[in-house]
Each structure stands twice: as structure tokens, then as C-alpha cells.
Length: 284
Length: 324
Image (tube, chains in turn brown, yellow):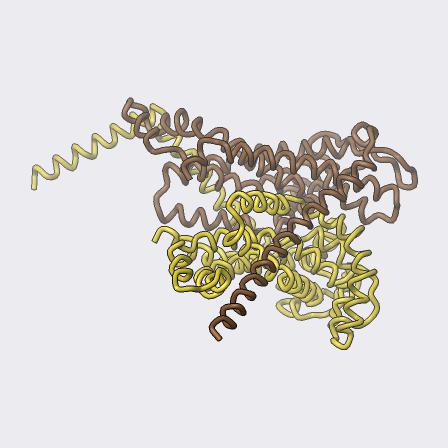
């Protein structure tokens, strides 16, 4: 009798534990399937024209997405120059200066901002930038993505600064450095590799954002004239080409997807490796 | 009495002196700059709320809260009813959770309780990469791989076996609630796994050891001891995933069919809040039309804020016990 129960329990144990293993394999399998499919299908559709030529007008085959690649870079540059400094400084405030209550409010707000759907941020960028200026622009797209970068920028900065040993702060202060000197010449440099990787991850995250760009940066079949004109970006091009009823455009969408995902994953893997090896993580 | 005032004055002048010194040294300025940045972020969030509220006023004033219960959406005829979109958003998100929660929790149990730490770390790394894939890529995969697959395999199978249920009736053309739910489930699984794993790992080892020492099997320990302890945090992770699913735009827009329709069948094409904003915002003309779309954005914002806010508190409540 005892043996029976124990056998049954053991059987349940094995079955349930293997089930959980199978679920893990399934999830990881999906990742490899996506990567593999994009790699094969996207790489096949990719050619040199993709990087050097402008999109062809509807009906003609060939052409590339040179303008969208540059466009994405420009929009991301604006986003970075908004999101990174703001997020970094607020992160410094949280890690080095703030009191309890305000820190809690700020942290909670930042978390909430992180959870706001990207399309809603797009609406706000539209209302604040596009509407007063009366046209879609790279700037508006950059503002939308810049706001989206803030939460992660704040949290990574805070996390990596907190990982710097207190002894370093005390050492600097004991040598007569002011608080600001301590923070900006000792603590921040000590965390710089983690900070850079964190910001890279942050940039990679918004690089694939499409929704907030649909009605801020809009899109453009030609080279954008300056920062205040509508501009093409890779994610929006992928979307437009994927839903277009044209096989040739679908191929280009795959190629663009391949390029975008490769860049994002490359940044992700490098940055995560730097973080994993960095001195900051050894303390945790 | 007299002496105490002089001391107070002394301290006061010294601190003022100190302040001026530090100001000259850049110390107070540095502090002030970081404070301004922190305040600016709060301002930006206030601006988001304010803009959404202000710009949706025309709709709130003319249509009022009937907007949320109206079933007809025909901007040309001036009819704005948001219920089909709210319905679509809820159905697809619910479907996504139905698939993703068991899968995600099971995988996180494997990663936290069973896998050797090295393997667990590698797998978690891969799963977190899955979270880094942009939604437009999921949409791409959804349109060209998932939809044909569902049309050829999943839908016939479902209507064959469960066809008597109202959820799996009618013709299936590919773009549907079902496809959107499936794509969403793949997208939210990584969030459930990475948060749930953290929460499970935060359960003290002693609890597991005690259960095992009493003769429980590994599974019994996990099911009866570890999971109940971590339940709040896991529910938190589910709500985080829900908020993500509600606000997800591109992948849903690409596979849901974009037809404002309320139907019991998951095979039917539908529409979601985020999808209608993505599709119609750039071309919307007329104050009422634009403000209706912005009002939809406000609804979405409110929903995700409430869910996220709650979820954060739940996760916070469980992971902060780690130290205790």
C-alpha cells in the first residue's frame, strides 16, 4: 500500500516536472523558429540595393530602403538626445541625492510611464509637436521615442550607480571632494560600462518601435528634407510593405525585418555580455 | 535663552555660508540639475495625462460616456461607438493570457526549481531576447507564417473538435481574433517567465528544504509550498503581461482583420483600440473624429495604468520579502 502511494506520487512528480520542461523547450523553440525563419527568408531577400537605393514607386520592382535606414538613425539620434540625459540625471538623483518619499513617487511614476502603451505616447507627441508645427516630422518621432526611453534610462542609471561600492564614495569624500565631485568624477566613471550597455539596450528597445512613429514621423518615399520633414523609418517601412498586396514588397519587408532584428539582437547580446562581465554585477 | 539664539544664528550663518561655498563649487548646481531632471519626468507624465484629457474633451462633451457603449463606428456618418474596439482588445488579451499563463508559469517553474543554474541562465537569456524582438517583426511572422498555419491546421482542427461551441463557428479567413490572440500570447510569454522566475527564486530555500525533509517530492514541494508563497508575485506578472497585451499595437493590427465587429466566434475578424488608433489617426479629419481616437487612447492609458499600478504593487510585495 505504501509502495503504491509512493509510486503514484513519484509518477506525478516526473510527469509534472517534464511538462514544465517541455513548456520551456516550446518557448525557446519559438525563438529559434522566428530567428531561423527570418534569417533564411530575410537574408535571401537581401541585396546590396537594399542599403543603397531609394524605394521604387508602386508597381516597379527593385529599389531599397537607404532612406529608411538613415531615417531610423536620425530619429533615434533625437530620441537619444532627449531620453538619455533626462533619464541619466534623474537616475543620478534617485541613486545619490533623493529622500524616501519623493524617490518612491518618482520610481513609481517611472514604472507607470514604462507601462504606457507606445501608441499613446505617439498620440501625445502628435498633440505636442505635430499639431502646433502643422506637419509630421522626424522631430516628432524622436520626441515620442525619447519619452519612451526615459523609464529604462532612469532605472538602469539608478541600478548601476547603486552597485558602486560605498567605500568609493567615502574615499572620495575623505579626500575632500564635494558631493558633486564624488558623484560625477568617481561614482559615475566607476559605473560607466554598465551605464553605456544599459543605454544601448534601451536604444535597441525603441529602435523597433513602430506604433508611435505612424503619425509622428509618418514616412517618406524619398530622402527627408531636414529634421522637420516627414521621414521614413525601418519599422514603419516593414509595416507598410507587409500589409501591401505585392509579393516584391513582402520580400523587402522580410529583408528589412532581417536587418532590424539582426541589429537589435546584436546590440542586446553585446550589451548583456558587457553587463554580465562588468564589475558592477559581481557585487550582486 | 539668549545663548540658544546665538547658537541658532551661528548655525544659520554657517549653513548659509556653506551653501554659498558649495554653490560656488558647483555642488548645489549639480544637485539642482538632477532634481530638475527628476521633476521634468513627473511633468512629462502629467503632460501625457493632461494632453489626453484635454484633446478628448470634444468627444466627452458631445457624445459623453455613451461613446464607450456605442456599437457603431462610422466616422463618415458621424457615428462613434467604441464598444467593438474595447471588445476586441479584451477578447484578444484574454485569449493571449489563456495560452501564455500556463505555458509561462510552467516554464518559470522549470527555470527556477529544476534546471541547473547554468542552463537556467542561458535559457532565461534566450527568453529575454524573445522579449527584445520588436512587435512589427511579430506582426510580419504573424501575417506570413502564423495566419496561413492557423488557417490550414489549427482552425479546421478546432472547428472539427470544438465546433459545437459558439467560439469556433463560422468561416475562417485567417485574419481574426484567434490569430491576434495567438500572436499576443507569444509576445507576452517572456514577460510572465522572467518576472515569475524572479519571484520564485525569491522564495527562501529553507522552505523547500523543510518540505523535502518531510518527504515531499520535488513537484509537491513546488506545488504546495513554493507556488503558494510566490502566488502574489506570479499574479502580478500576469497583470503586467495583461497590460502589455492590451496596449500592443502593431502585431495585433497586422493580424486582427481591422473590422469593427462584435462576434462570439474567435474565427471572426475584429478590431482593437490600439489598432484603430494606428490605422486611422494619421488620416482622421474633423475635430470629433480625432478627439474620439484620442479618447480611445485615454481609455487604453487608463486601463494599463490601473493594471500596471496594481501589478507593480503585487510584485513589490512579494520580492521585498526576500530579505526577511
